[in-house]
Image (spheres, rainbow, N blue to C red):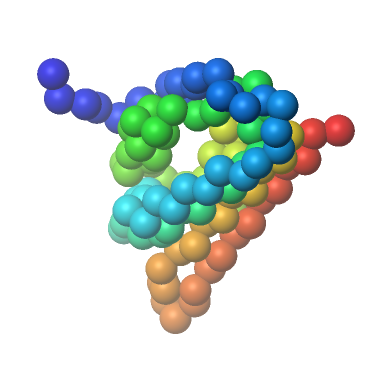
Length: 118
């Protein structure tokens, strides 16, 4: 059965919850739509986090990011939404999501959103 986009993020137990370590993902094929023009926006989404009890499963992350392909979203909104959804799914010690968007109208936009558990 072919895969399809999904906003469902799956997790699995952290194999080393006793150790603080960092997981990094670079997702260079992210696309969403400009909410003003409807044209595609291309970005690299970079995710960096220190897991607590769970980790995000990669296929579900791929399908989650794919789900934005037909959504109109400002760069700031989509980067923060990705952070919010990932934090809700894995409850990490800390997480950073960076949206590094391709040049549009002569402007290169990079949005960095952070979460630190208290």
